Amino acid sequence: MGHVGVLLLNLGGPDQLDDVRHFLFNLFSDPEIIRLPFPWLQKPLAWFISTARLGKSQENYRQIGGGSPLRRITEEQARALQTNLKQKGQEAHVYVGMRYWHPFTEEAIARIKRDRIDHLVVLPLYPQFSISTSGSSFRLLEKIFQEDPGLQHIEHTVIPSWYDRPGYIQAMADSIAQELDQFPNPSQVPVFFSAHGVPLSYVEEAGDPYRQEIENCVALIMQRLNRPNPHVLGYQSRVGPVEWLKPYTEEVITDLGNQGVQDLVVVPISFISEHIETLQEIDMEYRELAEEVGIHNFRRVPALNSHPVFIDDLGDLVLEALKAPSLKLSQVMHPEQPVKIYPQEGRAWGMTTTAERWNGRLAMLGFVALLLELISGHGPLHFVGLL
Image 1 (cartoon, rainbow, N blue to C red):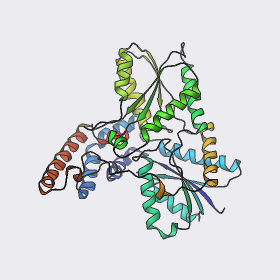
Image 2: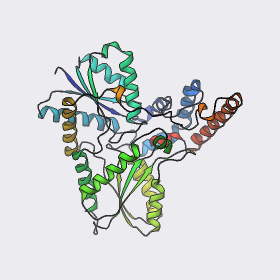
Image 3: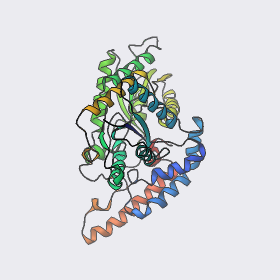
Image 4: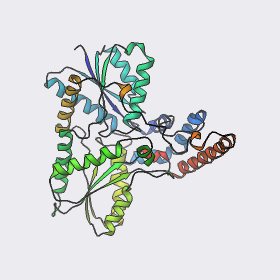
């Protein structure tokens, strides 16, 4: 088979406080995060946001130890997966490619070329597919492959999502059971699954399968858990004036408190590694809200990180991908139609001369509104859990 490689894709995060500004600039330079009606504004806006939000973002990272643990954890996962594959008789190099911070996807690709990899498995560390997470990373990787003749000899296969993997489901169920058993009444404690939200338009207009995969994943975990506990699903990190997937996490917590719930187990369903959205947003912001509404025993299920059952299942997944017919980057789902990311793209308002004039006015109004949201702390920065 030749030299085998596995490329793990993830978002990335600043390693230390001095990295925050550069990380934010990289993040908001990406039109997948903020799609502007005027592309030439992308980098100036990214500079403005990274400057305006620097203090607040650094404070949040300071609260969790001065930086994101995501790189360290992802590299631990890579080493564990490489060891697992070797134990199963498959020699492979496992690489980490981050979208917005080191090691960048481009850095991983350079190492893959240096190691003369012949067969590459592309594995996103997002269990459920979304055009804004796995999809964004796939599109970047596809562009890199198209522009680099030196990559044409690499036989690659892509794993779009793996939310229904038996080992992943088992590891999640085991982790939830361990938290429930800390309560005196474990069978009565509600289980609250909190997933990262996406705009509703992604699902209803662009055909994003994210919501369906999240709901299916929750059902599989509860089936494997096999306990009578009530459960509910919510979505965190919503921003802006557009509608996001509902119900929202903060509203679910408030409703549960109003119903007299005092004990709660929270499951970060779309996150497999500890990072700012688990350590700061859930553990601090949502815990504080829960206390305010009377939920005094608030426990959060840890992210899987390098859970041995989880890593073992990833190893099986890679081996299966190497044996199965390959799925190319060009075959991975692309949006069925352009997504109307806030602020709206000009083409959403028509093509007549009058419409084009109003398009410009509306686009500028949307741009100004976006700036106001970002300055006030309620903008797309929160979309990736950085507030």
